Length: 120
Image (cartoon, rainbow, N blue to C red; front, side, top):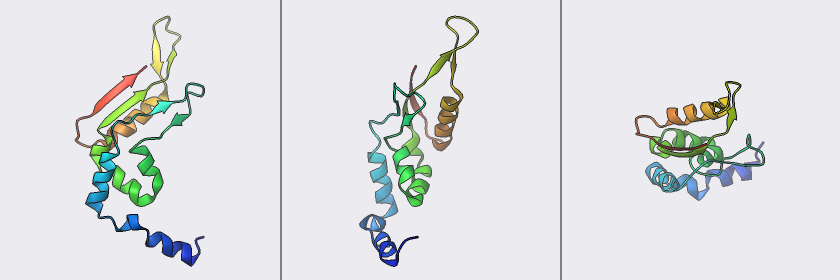
């Protein structure tokens, strides 16, 4: 639980006084270049270090703003982990969590035409 002084500091934070449209433009300017990188030593551990995912992790109001701004989701560079299947050589499958993440990203794009770069 926050003390009253901590709560007061949070509500008086300068970033809270920035108008929505200005903050939204700042978010958009944070985008490029951005990518999601996979730690090669631990491929399941995603290092989500770039906008818009970082913006979603700051606070609930930033998450709401990021999720309601389709332009933030218009471009993605994604490194996919693939596994060879039992179908034989040359048969590969995208891992379920990678596919689910790509679907999540696509849902947030709204009507914006996506630019997606996939690296396998």
